[in-house]
Length: 75
Picture (cartoon, rainbow, N blue to C red):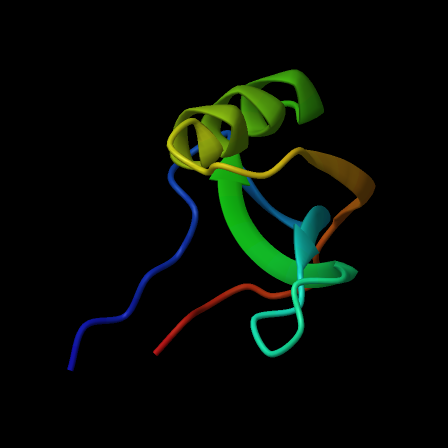
């Protein structure tokens, strides 16, 4: 089992990402929300990591919430 903990000086941030997509069943606009747990040094660093991961998405997205997480370890 691998245990992940933030590197020295880093923290985990919990970020809510809203994606403005469409319902696959009927094609009507639909909003999706995802929660991402990201390791980073600052909120700016975390935003850059999310932007890098979301770069290939075809729908508009935005970060609607970001907070420092109390999670210390991920198993």
